[in-house]
Length: 348
Image (cartoon, rainbow, N blue to C red):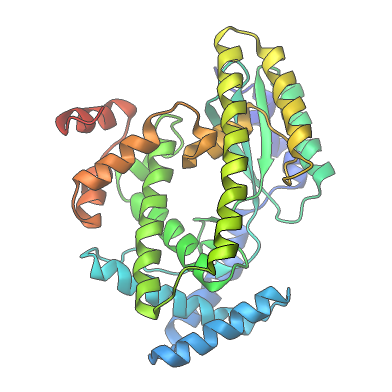
């Protein structure tokens, strides 16, 4: 089922998508030359203690809600060098080069069929300063033009445009997200990345990037001797996250059940009602099919009964090294290809 012509031709007449569109070409023309210059001219310090002092100063700035673009440029080069070194240590050639820009990332417009949760289309990127009213306007425009689809405009932590954009995070989070977006660029040289828009391939791609993100970040943390957060705060966060995932998992499970019975309107009413309940505790704007289609690609409770997160995890464990895992999974261009590898390794 494809999108109607009205949505496919959004560039050619006035509408909310065109009005709020984020231009990837415009971003690249504005930011890439300076990013290349910074990478060639900024020489980060090599001493661990000095690097830690600089990272601490940057984190303090972020905690205060301040932005210093020259300071951010130094952090970009330092973090990129840490990621490149960690990738090399895994026996992987860091190509394309690790670069990124710290900047508010655009919003993503996700479209799913209403009758089942499935990421059908990624329409476009929207400018990073949308209000909730403007997000609703875009979603309403899509759903009125395509009544069989559900739309969701969502924030993201980063995106692999050129240069990649990473949000204003503290350094530890920045390292993981930047490694994640580098992996997207790396995978574009192979079938798994080139087939990203396929709804059956997209979750495999995202889970692979998350796997690399986690392992590269852990390697960098070890280099700097970073410990876990204070135990009481960590436990409080974990308890809250478990409560959220339990609630979201229950919503996904019931929504899937109702949709399997072709009770589409009932499923949507259920998701809307539960969203209003959770809004008292969590900053949720909307829960619909497109919400789950987007967030479910990253695993967790939003994925529902989808076995893909567990299967990718098992494939990583069977592959030995991170390099071996990437070499095995990067050639996948379909769900059938993924299942063929799983069968060879006897992964259910």
